[in-house]
Amino acid sequence: MNKKRVFSAILAAALTVSTFVGCGDSSSSNTPAVNTGAKQTDGKNLPELTTEPMEIVLWDIATDEPAKSTQEGAVQRFMADYPNIKVTQVHQQNDNYKQQLVVAMSSGQAPNIYVHWGGGPMAEYYKSGFANDITDMYAKYDHPDFIDAAVAQSTYDGKMLAIPFGGLSGCDIFYNKTIFEELNLEVPETIDELEEVCDTLKANDITPFALANASKWTGSMYYMYLVARHSGNAEFDAAYTQENGGSFTSDAFIYAGTKIQDWVKKGYFPDGVNSLSADDNQDRALIYDGSAAMMLHGAWQVSGIKADNEEWYNENIGVFRFPEDSEAKAKGVPQDVEIGTAIGMGLSFNCYKEDGSVDQDMLDACYVLATQYYNDDTYNNDQISTGTLPSIKGMEDTIDDPNMRIITDVFFDASNVQLWYDQYLPASVTEVHKNCMTELFGLEKTPEEIGQEQDAAMQKAIAEQ
Image (cartoon, rainbow, N blue to C red; front, side, top):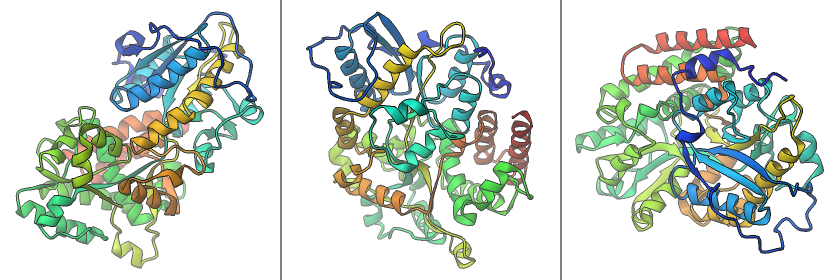
């Protein structure tokens, strides 16, 4: 197996990034682990781990609380049970993470465990030789009873390539209940009603949507939902294959792009929308100070806002599903396709020796860490306490947060959950798609022009497969 073989299209997009392990926030490796004797894995059907010294390098994007402490806790519990194994845990920034990972792979510095969102990039990591096939291990050894959708999202070509750990993440509209009550606004059920709400907010000097689009994938959520409401999955699926006339310039994509640019011109988004950073929570800040009233975002915002100020969250924040396209619905287009992920994130393993053979001792250790510590009771309880639902059967019965209940009900009622475009698309297309979101919200190019850009990128990716 040639470990230097990397998908050239994404490498080209990534070469401007020069940071590797040392540039992230590294933790755990220098903290002594305390072995109390009994292991929490005792009595389970798991591989017996080596007693020889070993170091595992793990990359994640847990730069903020509560995820940082939760994930570091999983690593600490593992090292306490297996003190001969040192896990060097590196927290990378989300925005450049995929590019950093590709550069690390191309330069021989790939981590042994790394997080990702599944989809096209996971398949490319595997095909390029940087993801172990754990199908046999998953069938042989103990693991959590993950929901079927999570297993499916962790699988490519019939091969299990990742262990879910991040939880279900629906995508819905968070809103300030206090502002809605003061202006006598009702939760909108259609896009027409949503626009009426936005116009009322604008008339009262309140920006309708808190969007920080420097991250680009944040703007993509609006694009994805408008496409889904106008066509279900049909037009995206066709554009993805580029078969039978499928194109990112089809009706649903033009509708979505036109609607977004209309909303930009009407002032539905904050000034300088493309310069605001979601990584710095500049979108949440607009909700906190009352200058914006709504925010289309992932379910992880529940834990983030709670961590900032739980009392304020309980008093002010509500959530509703993205409104329906009434005209499309009248034509029979399903309105129950939702955006999100069944795994939140997955952990894949890059455990190979210099000669390209599998390093089974390291792979065994990675499997135990991912299945037994990132998904143990402590980890899952931490997830639930901050509003994240693990992708494990029965966990939905534990929810008591009313907003998470709505998000979960919407998720489970969906006919299909469309994974985020920037995770589902091949990595080379992802970069083009994200740049198109900057161009779209910045009114730099028309919906037709960004559609053509995405078509060209998709056709190139298909030709290189």
